[in-house]
Amino acid sequence: MKTILVTGGAGYIGSHVVKMLGEAGYEVIVYDDLSTGHEWAVLSGRMVRGNINDTVKLQELLQQYNIDAVIHFAAHIIVPESVGNPLKYYLNNVMGTLNLLNVLKQCKIDKFIFSSTAAVYGIPSIIPVAEETPLSPINPYGRGKAMIEQVLSDLSFSNEIDYVTLRYFNVAGADPAGRIGEGKPDATHLITMALRTAAGLCPHLDVFGTDYPTFDGTCIRDYIHVVDLASAHLKALEYLFNGGKSDVFNCGYGKGYSVLEVITAAKEITGNNFQVNYTGRRPGDPPVLIADCEKIGNILSWQPSHNDLHHIIETAWNWEKTRIARYNG
Ligand SMILES: NC(=O)c1ccc[n+]([C@@H]2O[C@H](COP(=O)([O-])OP(=O)(O)OC[C@H]3O[C@@H](n4cnc5c(N)ncnc54)[C@H](O)[C@@H]3O)[C@@H](O)[C@H]2O)c1
Image 1 (cartoon, rainbow, N blue to C red):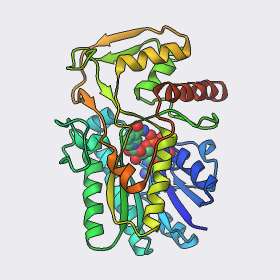
Image 2 (cartoon, helix red, strand yellow; image 1 turned 135 degrees about the vertical axis):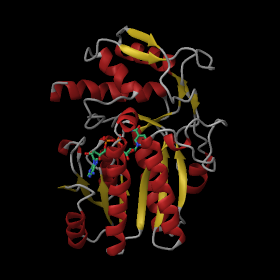
Image 3 (cartoon, helix red, strand yellow; image 1 turned 45 degrees about the vertical axis):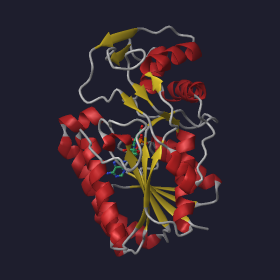
């Protein structure tokens, strides 16, 4: 049985991957400082509380367990916050990852899966955006992720690591069994915000910009269900264990929905005609961001099975109701 270290495994995406790893028979060690994650979200394996910048704790952990591969989620993830406080992001997302990679090298652990983001593309001129597009991030969050992508490429070139980088597009939805989902009270993503507005936790939902060059004037994004994203990580793991070479894959569906389409679907599903405020554009929002996801299908044989906007919103809504009842908002 293989043992996987999952940093940030108590967070939104990490917890879905941890659950799936457990169901697939992997031994799981979660390493998380619980800065935004929750112990209740860890449904499989062992939870160790610690920070990726804590070299000694990481060394002790890796001496205690025989780790076969690492899936690295631990990071701060709020783009506007990264603009206001870049050092917070570079210290955690860049320095923390470098520290982790250094300890992995000392312990001779050389299989690594990295959570990257569509934010590394900035405002791409060709849609759908393919992996070979030159990276051009426009905020510290995206720049930090792009820096680590470069570091991984260099480490792979010097044969120190075999890695898969997954560039997530807009992650949404929740475990269909309703046990876990987005748990951050200050989550900023559209679907979560819309559902929390429908649930009465926010007075209204802001739409940033209605004059984009799209069919209804609002931004278009590629939403991927978190369970499909989790299965991409298991495919990446199998690929590395079977000797696959280091590579980078987009994770999306190759289909986009506008902000207004998402809001209409959220109103239908919740039965709540919540208030929407239309405001100006936010700096740095690309009009359209859709993944070219042929590569992940061809090389990792990944196939989505939750690629339906209504299903994504329904699972997120079921979870949101549970979350509010259980944790009082
Ligand atoms: N949510 C998205 O739509 C999205 C999109 C693209 C990429 N990503 C990437 O996916 C990963 C997971 O995102 P998420 O939405 O699950 O976020 P999250 O905040 O729910 O999860 C991050 C987890 O990492 C932990 N963590 C943060 N810093 C840590 C540190 N220094 N040491 C140990 N643990 C630490 C947090 O406690 C949390 O449990 C991140 O790397 C993020 O950049 C997310």
